[in-house]
Every structure is written in structure tokens, then in C-alpha cells.
Amino acid sequence: MNRLRIGLLFGSFNPVHTGHLILAEHFATRTDLAEVWLVVTPHNPFKAAADLLPEAERLNLVELALAGNPRLRAEDIEFGLPRPSYTIATLGALRQRHPNHDFVLLMGADNLPGLPRWQESARLLAEVDIYVYPRPGTVLPDLALFPRVRILTAPLLDISATYIRESLRAGKSIRYLVPAAVEAALGKK
Image 1 (spheres, rainbow, N blue to C red):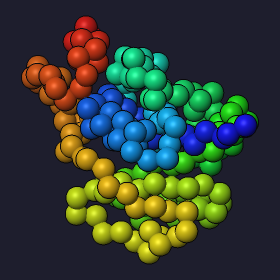
Image 2 (image 1 turned 90 degrees about the horizontal axis):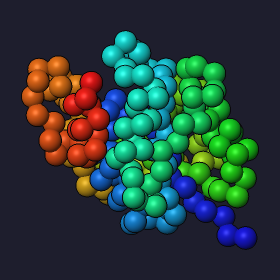
Image 3 (image 1 turned 180 degrees about the vertical axis):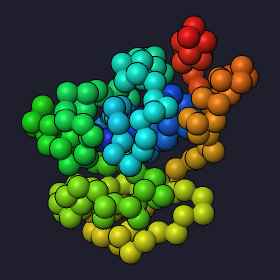
Image 4 (image 1 turned 30 degrees about the horizontal axis):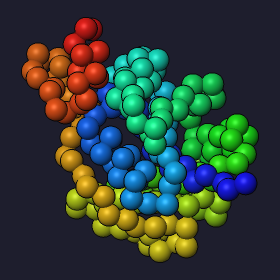
């Protein structure tokens, strides 16, 4: 049986936006990955939780955004794991649930320098392929030379979830920043 290679794009997706989707679609269709799963993180250990939409709402928005795309999927595995969520624990849980899949981490170049601070980072580097996409102005650390780290190109949009949340609070349009279904769902709040 062939093992599927699945890319994991972790994020709070607060909310999911067009930049996330373009990146996920790029990796799902222009690499050796069969699918890309957007792993909704209840709480990133490096970020404050104060401004987060409820996790179920963020998952629903990701599902709305991915509807009809068989190569992209919303994943909620971290909802049932201890908090804060650590990538190494999530990978262990995913491997148990999907033993015939090989998982690949998708990460922005801006996150690569911080990887040594992640829980069990040496194990991550030894066990998992990491596909790194560029971030403007980011200088790649020596970590980029590790055998399991691949630096790839990808189209990037300079859109942030923070900008979208600020626009919503100010009553401004978020049209085209998020999929229409996400815009409609956020407009009902």
C-alpha cells in the first residue's frame, strides 16, 4: 500500500484567509504532497489567547473555506490534546490515527529560526520533513541546511488575520481577504 504524504499547515486561523488558502493549494498541487491539512490550533504556546475566536468557530470557518476542495482538509486533532498544543504531540496523535500517512510540516521561513525552542525540536528535525516557504525580509538560519528541511517557493500575500479582525471591528470590508463563505459567516456575528 502506498503511503500518502500529507502536509500539515498549523495555525490559529483567526480567521482563515486567502493567504492561507493560496499557500495550502500551492503545496497540495505543486509538491509531492497528496493533501494539505490545515491544523486548527486551539492555542499556540508562543501567542496570547486573549484575541482568539472560539476554537469551534475557527474550525467551522476553515471548513467553510475549504468546502469542495478534496486536496485540502480542516483538522481538529489538537482540540482533544493537552493545552498548550505542541507539534511533536500532535504528530504522535496523527501518526496513531493515520498510520499509513507520512506527515510533512509546512512552515514559514520566519518560524524556522524559532524551531530550536519548540518542544523536542531535535526529534522533529530527525523524524519529519519540513517544507519552508519564504517570508519577505527573513534571513534563513543554518537550520535551513538540515537534511530534512526543504526551502521551497510559494506565492505569498501580505494578509494578516490581525488586519482582518481590525477591519471587522472598524466595520470595514474584508471582501477578497477571506473566501465569501467566511465573510458571510463573520458578518453574522
